[in-house]
Amino acid sequence: MSDRRLQVFYTVARLLSFTKAAEELHMTQPAVTFQVRQLEEQFNTRLFDRTHNRISLTEAGKKVYECGERIFEIYAEMDNSVRQLTGDISGVLILGASTTIAEYMLPVLLGDFKAEHPDVTVRLKVANTDGIVSQVENNAIDLGVVEAPVTNKNLVVEECSTDQLVVIVAPEHVLANEDVIPLKRLADFPFICREEGSGTREVMLESMHKSGMSDSELNVSMELGSLEAIKGAVEAGMGISVISSATIQKELKLGTLVAVKTDPPIVRPFSFVHQKQKFRMSAMDELLKFARNYCKSYHADET
Image (spheres, rainbow, N blue to C red):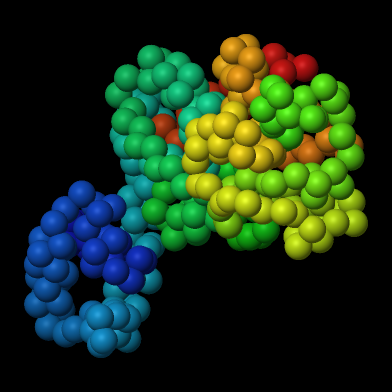
């Protein structure tokens, strides 16, 4: 039996989508369908039920999926054991990160890691926190780095460092001369908010709730999914927003934005999240170790 056919089937079964599997495997959808049909021919039975543009596993498909999971775990154990013996650190790692981390924290980390481990290929997927956690749950990515608490107790969550959120305003704004403002003052001005599922938004709303504010008190004038778009809108005087202090260093130096701290402070963790796998690639262990050291130095620089 071809490993490739089982890998393709396993990916389709995990995502329950031929289209998404093709994207993840960097294959065409007809090629994915062909590989699955070959496996079905091998077993002389259907592995998927296809109805109304949706697919589900047949009883045979469920059995192949369960066995495939064990097979890939044994492969991972074998690969890891051999690489530990030879000292080889190579392979492909799929890393997922929420927008803030991907744009402002990871470039330096991944650049340094790649310089030290040139034989490891890192693929980065960017999504909001909810999206990254979902992809970790579905084994679509090896390691996620997120900016909000993770509630799934079946995942390993390891806090890397902390990040402070600040209010950003245009230089001519009435709040620009304030050093600290009560959280409740956010309700006094048009507010530019991140999209639902954003870690920044979730942490901000949680802090508001703890301060006795409700979501409806915010005068939300815009919802934007891009940090650069939010900063541009605030610079143009269209409202205020709350974002990570790490994302506005350039604007603070140029004087195009002003940062104001909140009372109480809004602080959140940057965390690694991954599956509770017994066996991992040596490259994954090395990246985790490298990232932990990076986060320690990053946190030290912040303090």
